Length: 385
Image 1 (cartoon, rainbow, N blue to C red):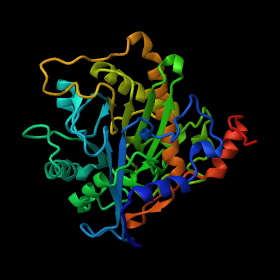
Image 2 (spheres, one colour):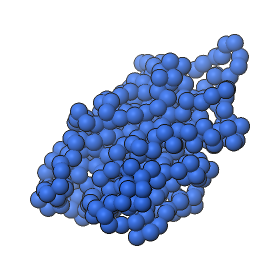
Image 3 (tube, one colour):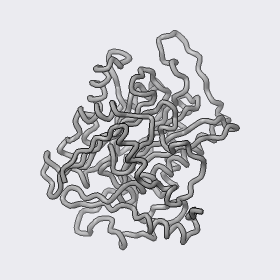
Image 4 (spheres, rainbow, N blue to C red):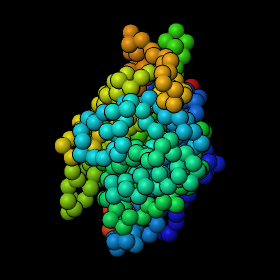
């Protein structure tokens, strides 16, 4: 196997359209999704991905096999210098998300953010800065990009440092507002979830007009979970499709660290300020819990939320007028975040396909028909009419 996949905007849309999503299989979820059921339902948000798949067989550090990539999120699009209000939360901190000290201090996220593998955070961060310099997008003399990671070292030559600046540039330049490809793509290429193949997933919720009509979109890089804990729409899928049926890992190989990691990005167009957005980021943890996540000691579960409302308030004026949703009206956004996070995780698993990587290590894709059988058994399947 020798291929490097560079998803352009058209390729992203095509890949997203070709794969079934959890709802297509009859998985019932609470809440009403947006038109794309993706983070890009929040107007102005763009997502770009570069996927690197190359080589097979025995690991040769620096050569491969390569199973990795990078996912970028641009809150106001690729040509905007306008920061967004943001807040972040660490459920368990065995991971990395750069730039969060300034997010916490200032209340804003400036420029694009990215997700990749653990050992590529530095190059991705530096590449974002170089791209901003090239396009005159720096707001000041320096930048502190937000870049997060999960560990794909079970499948990928993670110490080969295969993510290069040009891959980050490609993801940024081809980012779009359309459908978002899921599964074995971008930063999620080499990841697992509940001892099945995991990766990139997304979902959204549209609030009714009576609740403000706001949109909440979520994107996850899912690389966590223990098989027996997996719940889908309240059904104990992990116990029914157990490691006896689909091995979690060969028993002759070392056991994984408990749980693994997940990065969650929450976007909304609701007029929230930084402390409220941190509260939104905290609620993403409840979406993980609905799928069975426990956030173990070895897990890097780090979440960030931002709002595209209030454009221009971080400008050079001495004072700005800010719109802020009343805390009395925020519960609907909490609920939307929980529901969208839950669906994004399951979407990542449904889209992900069986992948063999370094040293013939393998993560098996979640079997769709067996998933439907389990949901039917527990009367949770939404049968097509």
